[in-house]
Length: 196
Image (cartoon, one colour):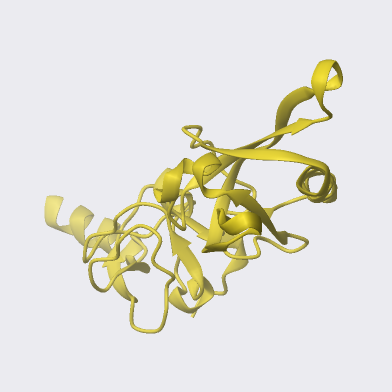
């Protein structure tokens, strides 16, 4: 009787699905390209499956936020896609290198941008955008030979785009490394993919 029960329940159990995993070790800031991901068979709990991917090709161009070891399951919270979800924007702005973490900032990290507008008694300082992903960084010489860093971030709404553009054109910016790792609206989601 036990053997019959096992045979029946086994027949009713759906086959394990294939999920995207790292095909090799991927460092933080790495942009996913062909050959970086593969598929592995796994039976995942619903809460993990909901944050995982069945179609590696849907993740091409995404940026790895933390180290992924070979064979590690790829999950939405560990990636950000340049350009973000539909309607997303990329915005670049210059900032003095000594006000942008002294060259230690890396693609894939998340930052807050603080702006000081006005001068003297009328000056005010406030956050412009918070916990946004960095998708590109370049450095060069600005005016008077001062080194300038140009940072590109992915933003998810027009209000943030306008606020950052205004602050960049009218104030002094400071970039702060964000420790808030709440889910970003620009993280790729399993719903973005199509199953093979």
